[in-house]
Image 1 (cartoon, protein in one colour):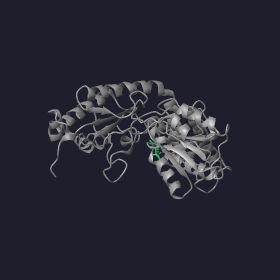
Image 2 (tube, protein in one colour):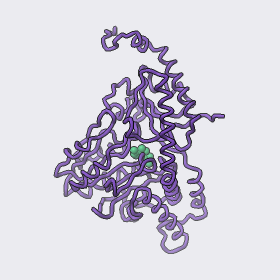
Image 3 (tube, helix red, strand yellow):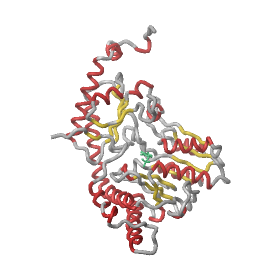
Image 4 (cartoon, protein in one colour):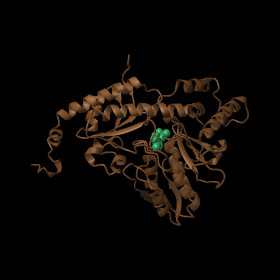
Length: 405
Ligand SMILES: *Cc1c(COP(=O)(O)O)cnc(C)c1O
């Protein structure tokens, strides 16, 4: 029997893997020490657990364990990377290069620096697949540029940027390269050496670990990257991030990284297959459906589709036993269409009609079939009630219609 509601929103968050929970349990009330307590075994045991997690996390991205700085999540990692670099290198310059489809944690950090007069920011456009052009990055670099920050893979449309090429350009020009790799780490191979990334943000809860824990990788050599802290306190994490470590969360995050690393090839293949099955189920049974994002260079578990003549929000309400997300209202209180979808050049109506299906570790083929049937039927039902869809079917060019007010 199929159990509902079905969770298919794995780019928003993921269920904590039971094996991760298992690893975390002893650290709540048995091994509960403060990892910064240097003078007794409670502290040493906690520190040992943190060291193990640091190794597990570093191993997943080809880093050294001392290069991992623990944070409260990727929002903080993005803030620390961007604000910390701009502050530390302020004598060198104040120019930052990013892209219009970044996560709000990146965009709003940039905006905050602009508002304070601390940075001038170039927001690069993307092509119709949501991809940034490495040559545009190269051309945007000036002698005042201190940071390039481009995400690995987009959380809404799943597009994977040409990160290795961008890393190469940044390295050639001697510019620090930060990458928000939250959606990529654990899902596709990420390697800070091969990709030439200097700072990398990651988060526990997007890879079947707990919420409220993340990390920032900070390159220690070639070049040694320095940054100013945004939180002052006891000088934990090599002075870059003060605050008592979330030992339990860190243990879970470490375990999640190890599992993701081990299972990545099979999991990615399985998710791609489920995604194709879902895509085929929708595209073979409906007309006027459009894929958002790159057809091939995309995250294995992401499918983002616009259903013309259907409001995303109405569709969501019609399939209330399926948890997916729509391109409307998801980033603001007002009903604005997603800025990511809009940046692809998609018109406002189609942006409003977009749905993100986020497949993950715990989804099954049976669930995919249920969701594809459910969505297909609901789209057909909504379109039957749509005079616009009727008119379009009759061959009337909607743009030529003179509407009476
Ligand atoms: C989820 C997400 C974040 C924020 O991570 P939190 O750990 O929830 O703060 C940042 N960037 C991207 C691309 C994300 O998907």
